[in-house]
Image 1 (cartoon, rainbow, N blue to C red):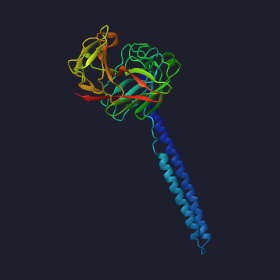
Image 2: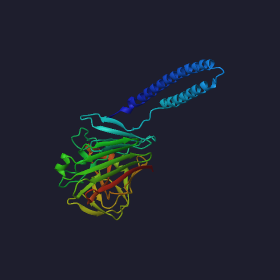
Image 3: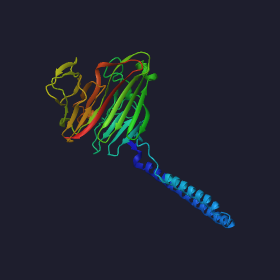
Image 4: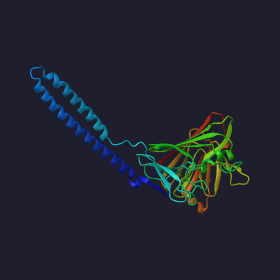
Length: 365
């Protein structure tokens, strides 16, 4: 569990203190101005009497004008001091309670929606819509001590999806990303090549991951920039774990009927043909649907809600995974529906970038 500092009331208390100090400054300034005006007017009357018959108005008008200008300026300044301080950052830092105390950022939206993202792996581990429904799942066996990737939420598979020449799913999911900015309901994370990454995959790069919390959806964008002088290839995915009421009450809907599906549970992997647009998980599942992405939906009868997984660029394939029957992993409470570039490597020329997006859009059934 993470510590949510918003519950401690510190931002609210600090804002109140700042407001009180501003009011106090304004009060002192106004009182000082009134004293100046009082003595100025007294001097004006005295000077006017001394100059009777010699154009006393010539002395009075400049003093009165100066006093009025002073009071006007003080009034404007006191109003500005009295304004409530602007809160630029709505993102709230926190930590996971446990070994390592991994840092996270909680984004909030006026609608009531909220999301939590960890710097470790740039993994979003919670997305609650405006009604409070949770859409991301974290496995009960997940580690939050930095010893391995967080098993849940939205981990990054980069620069390799699945097994291969590199460590499984690459290094992005168990690397510490930099938090570039966290303003309003948007957070931006960045991962660049370093000694660890170059020992695994010797290419200069910069990956930028943006998470934008809107009133009715969670928007993500991943940009991979080639900062080197030679091209590179990679595969990748957002290994998304979605919270479900019960896996037996869920179906995954999309343009699947007639599509070839790579069934990786068979050895060697075999190609099967989908006979329906609806897929039910009834056994341990590890499948890739090449060329299908962007209009895939999870329908959860238990929640009486659906979640659209929408992608308009970058991601080309859909991956389905669930360790059906594995209680240690909590198989009943999640399904992985992954936006991926798994079948064909992505090529990025020097100085060029690749961009992919995935939006999560809840709805009522």
